[in-house]
Length: 442
Ligand code: GLU
Image (cartoon, rainbow, N blue to C red; front, side, top):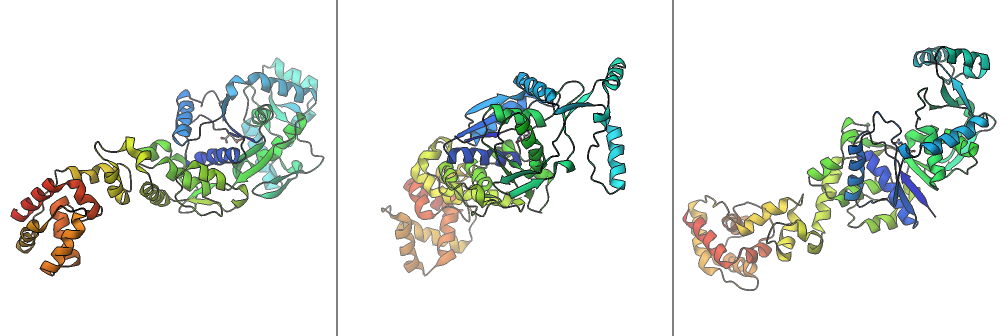
């Protein structure tokens, strides 16, 4: 059974890039009838905060992506210790002491000589006496995973196709700091094994981590999961923008964006499938296809989100939104204002043209005379607007804007808005006559 995971670090709020990764993992799991797990990567105790963990859960819930289970790395230290002990016993982990400055100097020298800036494994030459001497000075080692240079690391990426790395061109990664805290690389591989993750789907910034982690899986006696690396999200101007790195669920929600608009955009962005308003998660699940994603960066444009949001609203059923509508708005009211909405909150504004009060417009003498003539002709038929304006057209010779606009203005106080044929019955006969009289007299 397919099991995916979304593994955010709780060091900040989720932004659209993270949400996209979460969504694709969710859709992949659902599509295959599998499970979607949340893994909180909180090994960095200094930067992880509980409020961000809660924020992640809340954001996923708002988007309709409740995980099938949750794990926290801070509660799984024993597993990492066991894996560490095993790799140490097998000679796959070694002690090193270089400081950040020393490593930086080595890198500069290598680059100066036109060599790839990878760790030179100098620490492998240290003797037990050398280690004992460091310890006597109170200097503790950090720990590196020794890559096997024997053969290339290869996998077939579900998005990038065949990928191949020469391990000799990668640095042996530091897996544990001198203070015994863990870095990302080993705990993630341990968790993927222990949690039974079958598919790791993440950003292409992790491609070289995957090469290293494949060797970790093998060193720990596990078959690596399937991997897919997505092109990163960029702003509409084509760069990884600051805005994208901070735009999160809270802000989207506050600005009136519907969850389905976010999901519709992020599910398809970067794929060959069209970005279109999709009203249900199930449709996104059914149409999700990893093979439709390409290697070109996916462009995120907030204008697309606004457009999708309006389109989603225009198709929403009354039963779906009724709890979020202004007091008293019934199905006819919803259907009348729905096509004019960009945000759901606009419904309140448009509903006011039904409930009033409306601002009485100042019309010129000619239009006031027109209203005075029109008023007695208004009959409260089954379709009052159409019948009335049909008659007015014949009686006055007015047409188009000159026929309709003074009536709309008098009845709603606005120059544009929802279809008057739908709005007039909602305003009701008495209020309509009062508004027309007031405008005719003003
Ligand atoms: N916590 C890591 C990150 O947010 C997880 C990467 C992964 O999916 O393995 O980048």
